[in-house]
Image: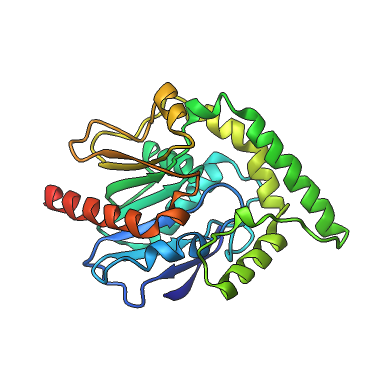
Length: 280
């Protein structure tokens, strides 16, 4: 894996790629969920199962992972979407797939709906992708996470130990990476960016109600058994009428890519190969 940095007017992105990125090959761009997580640590195991003829880019959102603090302190739907689209458009790749986990799907869907991407998306891959209609029924989740973030902000300011549970870190990481990840998350927990994003999360959700992935973009949805009932009750806005769209129910919790990295990479690879054939 090769570490890179991209300086934009919004801040400096940190991202990790294959050793050799061939622009003639399809590229999967990975995003983590809401908050402070690093795509490098979250997807490390999964990306290692990718073949050489498929590129991967593991990018940390501004204010998260090893990316810089964003220029815009307001972590609104519009600001984050504009930052993401600027990063992707700068890469000038022709054959891209976007993989989102959890809340980042909201931002990507907004980018697509607002026509912010200058490059064609050959496929959307969602891992328990956040549905606005579902989250309208779970506002307390944002409130609870905000309370925890504010407490960790207080602890950091007072030079107290930040309690960051192991559940926040990919358990399949090698020991040294696990410790580095845990240390990074402890330093970021309660950051101004995290607090702002949580405070504006419900507003972002409300703006994305009833917005769905267009039918011309094939979709692969990985749905956890933990949350499958919510998708059944309220729908999955990322599953559409494309003949190549598919939903896969997998046993596990919200971070399926931690539990099933090899299986999920295999399914992604087949999805990419099939949709490429269909698009040619």
